[in-house]
Length: 262
Image (spheres, rainbow, N blue to C red):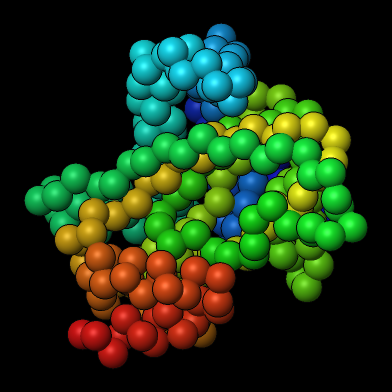
């Protein structure tokens, strides 16, 4: 079993309908998928890999801010294009996610990027995980992961499935807020990182999240499945206050806790 790999460039051609269906399946059935031909230049991705490697070797002066600025700009554009694709699949008006995440333009969405390194573990008999299972609190997460050293897994139908390393791909996963706005049609998914003994694993995760001042609630649309559970309306900042205390716990009590605040 492998998570879906989707050619994002085909959205612009004759295979658009098929590509939309693949993305809908990736969001609805998996919560994780990989994008290839996503529009971020390979040359830029190679520079990002070099920057991350040199940073890990404690050469802080080599962490070139310009490269990361370029990368963040491209990834943010990809996130917004992807959310528009989700809106189309959900039958929502264009801009629904961005409007909720920004309070209809009153606030800036939070867009952050985190570079992580997982060094080889010398005692795999004692350590299983590099990162415990959790779902992500925010909106859309875009991960440029190591193309040689694996370790990322998602929980699918009760089994842990590897997110296979794939050169120059961007791994997408949907966070808790996408689940809420889609009224449960798209789910945030449990994932973890295994400890490994076969090399340093590098990852660059970017998070397109609501402003802490944004009010999040299910969007109204005929495409929303009536059988899905109702989600509360809440301030994203309140949700984050709950999340930081319950990150590694089931997400359903987080929704209940934030509902009690309002």
